[in-house]
Length: 166
Ligand SMILES: Cc1cc2nc3c(=O)[nH]c(=O)nc-3n(C[C@H](O)[C@H](O)[C@H](O)COP(=O)(O)O)c2cc1C
Image (tube, rainbow, N blue to C red):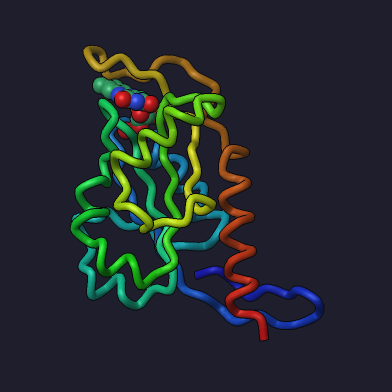
C-alpha cells in the first residue's frame, strides 16, 4: 500500500496497488522487489492470484521480461484485458532493447500489449541482463541498478497523489 502523502499541506489518503510479475533468471524479480520496497506494494505471481483478489486493488504494476520478442506476461494481459481496462495499469518491460531503439520498443509493445490498454506514459523499459541460455548463469553485468526504477516510482507516486487529492 502506498503510504499517505503530504502535498500542498493536504493529507493524501491511501491507495491500494499490487505488483504482478514473471521472471526467468531473476532480473525482473529484482526490479519488482525494489519497486515493492519503494512503494510498499505486495508482490504476486500471476498464477497465484485470482482476478477476484486483484479486484480489491486500485492500480496494478505489471513486470515482464521479453523472450524472443514475446513478453512473458503477454498471454495474461490478453486473458485479463477486460478486467485491466477498469484499472490503472503500469507496465515495466525488462529486455535488451536499448532506450535509443524507440522503434524496437514500439514493436515490442505493439506485439504484446492489447491496443489502447495501457497509457504509453505508463510503460517503462528497464535494462535486462544479457544471459547465456545454455549456461543459465547470468553474465557479469552492472546494468541492473535500483536507480533504473526512479522514473517509474515517481510516476506512480504522482498518480496516487493526484488521484487521492482531497
Ligand atoms: C533465450 C533468450 C531470449 C531473449 N530474447 C530477447 C528478445 O527477443 N528481446 C530482448 O530485448 N531481450 C531478449 N532477451 C533478454 C532478456 O529479456 C533479459 O535477459 C532479461 O533480463 C530476462 O529477465 P528475467 O531474468 O526476469 O527473466 C532474451 C534472453 C534470453 C536468455
